[in-house]
Length: 245
Image (tube, rainbow, N blue to C red; front, side):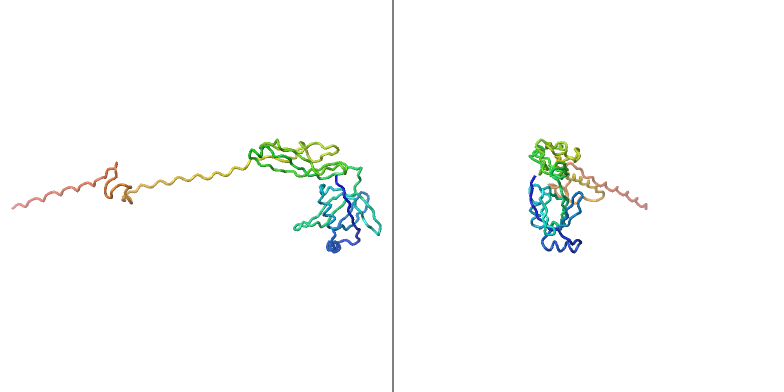
């Protein structure tokens, strides 16, 4: 576990206006807690704190905190308990520090890193990681920077759980063993295009002539294979009877 040194100064003023002035001066308001200790308000240099947070250990880094108070300096080993960020700029607004003992176990959140290209991905599946951190309990110096899970053997439909993580000596995993870490899901099928509706049948024309004769037929001639119906001839009128003289 990585270990760094960080300087801080105590501050007497508290409240919104006080912490605003601390931030304007280039510092981050902080509070140091510890079992059986009175919380101590501090100010930490913003750049120094950013450097502490960007180590391989992340927020689990062990910090030898040098605190100047009333002209005297004291040193405590601490860990970061909580960080508040600005929602837009992601600047650190406040940090809570907790005094620890190197001989007593602590709880920490540790990242889970997936390694390897799953077989299911080469088969066309998609790798989805559902759990990115787990909670562990161990001595401060034994906190791992991360825990690696090999997923090369995963096929489509397969998954890995917390219980599948490799054991680490001296580290107890507190997260439920049934929690799903990652799965390989089949790609979503594209929706099939709707079938074209059949063209409506042309209605039978009654009492009207066709709009145009079929191609290749002379106008006014009957189409091949069809017989034109001839109108019946009118009956002859009976001859008038001759007048008798």
